[in-house]
Length: 614
Image (cartoon, rainbow, N blue to C red; front, top):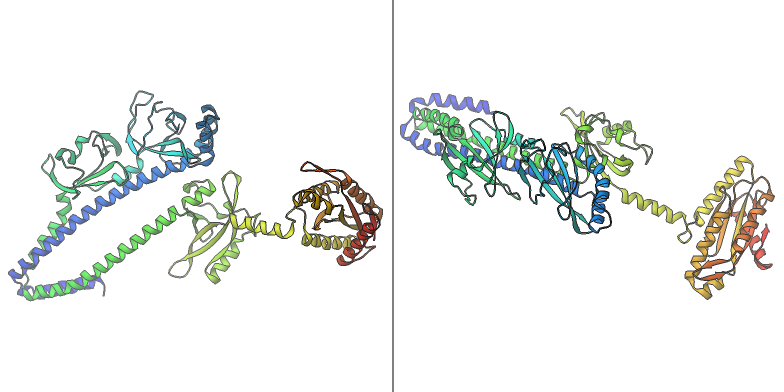
């Protein structure tokens, strides 16, 4: 049964019982009812004041966060740190910082000017729409403040919200960023109901911020206009509320709330006629109705009211829980480090959180209605096909995969993208929620694992596994093209005495130098790798004839005969080279390896430092 049916039953029951109304019961019931409704109305007005205070503090937090964000840019902080050490001049800091701060200033809403100071408070850079209008001697404010300034034109500006943040480099303060904003965002908070007034008062009670109702502009006025100042009410008054009378005789209910973390207080008053007007009317009607009821009618009405009150309490609790959940969801969306997008069913962006804007370098407004594909680098990773994502959303209601996001300054960042659909009551997909998790470290780790698996850790040359893969590919290509190539086995001569006489560090350095010489003496189509120990392998590119392998092998022997200069030692070694030709000495990798290895050992046993063919 809905609330309207409940109301109809209550009215019907009241009419039937009207003849049995009792005046005594009416008086007893009306007193607590009046008190309860009166208290609820006052609490509602107090809740409005609390909400306004929280809104103002959120505006202050937002602007203070913007100051911290500009001050946290590492490349600018580094230059300012060099200036603090005397390594660069203020002109260099100005030239380097100005274009980058201009880029940052362009995406900050309501910004009037951004000023960068050195650690001593001396102004270095100034950017923003009002950079040339404001005076040159704007002092650095160590707390969030609101002030008006004399303009260069001789006029006075409206109030500007000042937020500053220190700039850190290597753990010490090397400068400050101060941002001045127009107070338009406060104007929205100051909009209120008729018969209400809202203002901000600094903690020292030296200035007052109000919204001029005629111009709808924020103004800076003297503190005497505040009721709390005129009434002498202390900010230490824990009740946070008091009653007063205006000059026109109107009674008001006044609330004052300190803004936690800031040197400001919110003051709000509402005329009691406004707070209690509807309450008084309802009370009068209720009293007149109750007076017309008898004891039985009062009892029936009370029993009828119980389910309604219970339903209202339940609904109010549900609304409160839903509101809190929405607030928490909004906070997560706005402040999470993971990028989040909300798109329509066609992957057109509806909304993006600040983390996504930070990655792409575009403001939230600029992202609206842009296609998702504008921010994906489809040349990297496995590629993303939106139609495949749609199909998987229909079947399994989710999609997850690797994508590369295009960041500002040409960077691309690997991310794990998760797509979750939002459906209407008919099960149709109306919107999509996309979350992006940065997986740069994982991708780098995978690349490192691949490198370790295929490259020799000491020389950086292809290892045994990679050489076997190259050999198989060379055989397949030669088979397709009906061409020739050579497989060469190299074993260093006189390497063991190097380790014995000079130590393994010198031996390792010698192997690295051997690898470098081999890389520089072979052709671009040839491949050189280390098979293990002091054994190296060269796989040549296609040869025009079998004789083409001889100059390559001879050059290798000659290059390795030159003296090596290792850690102050002059070291002379040589190389024994065994050569196997495809297809003359074998058609399979295993056959070529055996033939080249056998040829190399023949060189070893017959005097070393030479070349032998299989």
